[in-house]
Length: 359
Image (cartoon, rainbow, N blue to C red; front, side, top):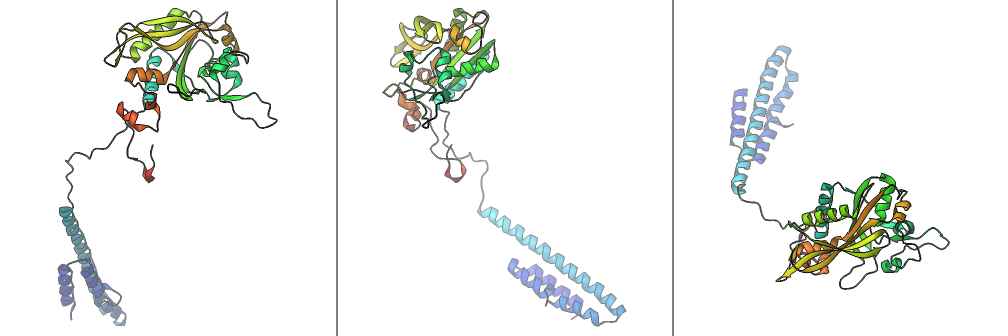
């Protein structure tokens, strides 16, 4: 059989191969180790030089042509298979995506973000501190000595000490006021900061939990007054509750770390079970405030004869309940997702992280 016949036979076999398996059989028959063209290539060694040169060129050209035909047919078969698969497994990319159940930010976290933004507009920075505090930062520096009755009101969680460890006791902080002391020590005066975060007290009843959230703030300068405090709180309440007018009432009170001290009430009404802030004939306590006590300034290394300022503190859980109309404290228990969903703060029902992990 001359090379023309061999070429015609294998080119026809390549063109007629119905699949990759049949095409592989053609390749092995022509170019495999025992293939017909490979066998012809093996005879070149027995030829004289001139004959070998001419026959070698023809065989190499034939080999390359068949190899190219095999590659082209393989690509054509792959394209045909892809076209068939696309016809069978089509997807309309213009269809809307499948709906996914979306979660929301927890109301406490959302309120933290909101109040941080509001106070930032008034020039307050955010300060943070440890949740496990020393007895000095949590009490003594805030004018609450060991014999002070306010310690009984806080009734705190103290850290256990090993026998023989005589270091001062540490406690889960009962308020975020220790952050104010740390901020004054590190940042100096003048100063305007808020300190949001978790706090811990031995309160366990229908209206209290042993862990809750507070935000406290201070403003220290040379000529700060109660008037500045009143304006700051009014502006905050107006922005936070999203009302044009608010009315606050300051009632004389006592806090160890402020003098004078005042409880702050806000005017509200309850119409058809809906709470309306800024109108009506009722008053509700929302926070405590006052002018920084000179002893607290001294404890932080600030001269009270040169600097003065105000302080305030409020429960974040409480103002979140007021703003979003949540009457039940159970809504803030992360384990009770039904309450959160009822008030519009749905948790994720289906984890969306690899390995079945949830956020």
